[in-house]
Length: 122
Length: 221
Ligand SMILES: Nc1nc2c(ncn2[C@@H]2O[C@H](COP(=O)(O)OP(=O)(O)OP(=O)(O)O)[C@@H](O)[C@H]2O)c(=O)[nH]1
Ligand SMILES: [Mg+2]
Ligand SMILES: [Zn+2]
Image 1 (cartoon, chains in turn brown, yellow):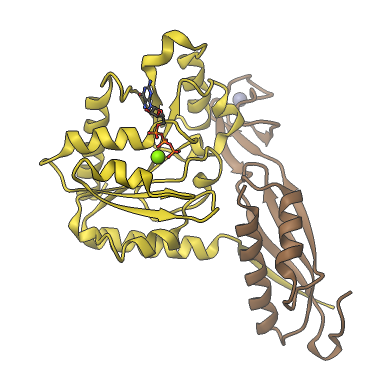
Image 2: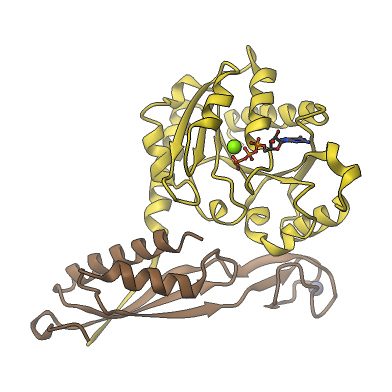
């Protein structure tokens, strides 16, 4: 529900990073998005496209990698992906586990144009 | 093109602001609770009852977040506690910067306990650290026992789950055991108490829990 706020933070991070790397344009931004986060990829992409306008990231493509929920079973220690947080453990059928993956909301890499060759928006 | 690895948490700024708030609370010796729930689960009503109950026992302050209006602040303020309303103007949650701004008005040093009533929303508030010491949430029995499975994050992040509006249990199909079982699957350490702000059931347990957490915080636990 707070995709607009998240998109703004991403744009800020892109502008900041591009500035520190010679001021070129940002072409691609890659984001890890865990299954437990409350962020919808489609709304985020939309809010991101709007948020980039008028910045050095205008036209930037947001590549989102959805990271599935990974739990470590409280009962038997089995670790693996689960469809939902209260799905039974595939090994021992117990419910419940420590969240090992799924809370990520993390920019991983950016693709920048060199400042010298920066031209119009792709 | 050049690839730049940044590995940056998108909520990095929020986490930094939250850490600054937390340092401020510690310096002031103020225990801070982030109270969350879906819309209308009974946060403000509980805080009205809490204000009555703790009057003269601890110095209680409330920061209340809503998208619009200062109605909740007015309700709570009638019970003689200091209260500050934050309007998010569309934002579906409070973030650490909004709380930092509120602290210009609500000096933590003036309070033993500061409760932040978050925006009514079962989803987003759980994602944003405000610098609080604990998160607590209300799941009212009219909302359905499937909520922990459907909206897991808040249950995962909370230290206490209040089963609210239990006076309505006779009128709704709500299986408290199922709700608690799912919530504890997400968070085995979750404390649970049943409460009705209408009949007063559970209010003593709630006040005890709050004061105990305040003392534990002071003892450095
Ligand atoms: N029956 C019953 N009704 C309650 C109880 N607690 C609150 N209510 C009612 O539930 C409605 C919503 O209560 P609020 O306290 O405003 O809820 P809230 O969580 O602060 O709402 P938002 O701030 O808008 O998210 C009001 O009509 C309350 O009177 C309760 O324990 N039992
Ligand atoms: Mg309220
Ligand atoms: Zn298992």
